[in-house]
Amino acid sequence: MVHRDEELIKPLRPLDGIVLAIDGVQPAKSHETLYLLRDVRSGRVFVAKTRLSSATAEIEPLIEEVRRFELPIVGVISDQQASIC
Image (cartoon, rainbow, N blue to C red):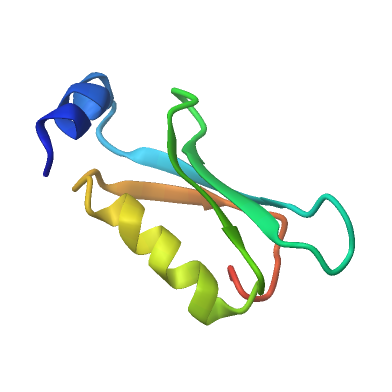
């Protein structure tokens, strides 16, 4: 883990886990979708990346990026998109 990452997540450690919100925003049909993965309680954005597809194989690596922070994920909020569920 990079030192900068530790500084950013240090305030989250006392929360005993994060509630991860996964939101995809597509500005126009057939354009890339911007995915934001953030902690609901703190508002801390862990990942903000665009994807051409909303397939599970595209979303899983984004979740893995959050997991590298080694904070327990105690809940997930989404709009029930099939690839996220």
